[in-house]
Image 1 (cartoon, rainbow, N blue to C red):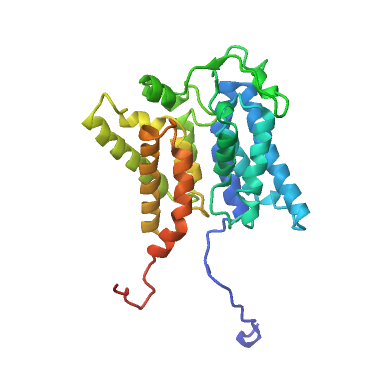
Image 2: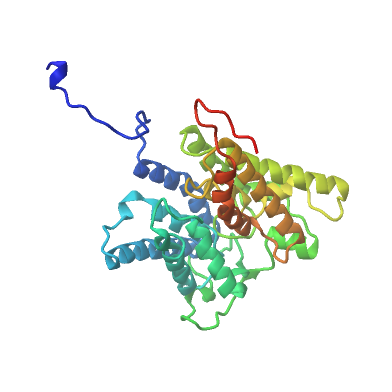
Length: 339
C-alpha cells in the first residue's frame, strides 16, 4: 500500500499507553483487596462474610437500578462499583444490622457517585460517603464492636445483624473497644504485633495492616497506584505523632501505634489513592497526603472520636480542585508568571 493510500488518523493524548484499561485496573484493585477481605471472614466468621456480601451486593444492585432508571447502559462491567462495595464493607463493624449496611450501600452509590455523573466525576470517595452517612445516622450501631475470633463465629452471627429494619438492635457478645478507643478513653495501648497481624477488634477490613499493605504494594508494583500518596500520608502521621510522643510520652501514643491502628492503612492505600479524588501533579499529591496525615492525627488526638481517617480523606477530597488550581505545571515553552 502506498503512503498516499493510508488514512490519516488524529487522536487525542495519550498516544502511547501500557495497555491497561479501566476494567483491568479495577479488577486488579479487587484482587488486591481479597486478602484483607478473606482475613475479615476468618476473623469474624459469618458476620464478616454477610457484611461484605450485603455491602457489595447493595452497591452493585444500586448501580444497576440507577443506570436503568436514568436510561443509561449498566456500568457493572467496569468493576468500579465492586471496589466501592468491597471498600465500604471493609469499613463497617461486623455487628452492624444488615438493613443499615444495605442503606449505606445505596447512599454510597447514589449520593457518592451517581449524582455527580458516575465514574470519573465523583469528587468524594463513594465508600466513605456511605460510611459517613451511616456514622451520622446510626452512631451507636457504628461504634459497637463484635468480638473477633469467637469460637462460634462460623456457626452463628450477632443477633444485632438480623434486626428488623428501623428496630432497635439487640447486641450480644460485643467487645469493649477498638485499640484506638481503648487508648483514647482508657489510656490502654495494644501491642504493635497484634495491630499488624489483625489480632484486635475493629471494622471488618481494618484489622490486618500487613495484608492491606501487601495489597497496596501489589498495585504499586503494577504501576496502578500513585505510591507518593500513601507514603506521604504514613510519613506525615509517623513524624507528627512521633514528635508529640517525644514531647510527652504519657499523653500521646507512640507513632507505630498510630500507623497500624484503625483504618489508616486501608484509607491511605485504597481510598486516598482514588484517581478521581486525588490531585494530578506530584507536588499536589504531596500536599494532599500531608493534609490527610495532619488531619488524621489531629482528629484522633484532639477530636471527639477516636478515628479520623474517614473525615480526613473526605475533607482532603474537597480541597483537591483548589490544590490542582493552585499547583499547576508550567506550560512547555513558557515562563511561570510572577505574582
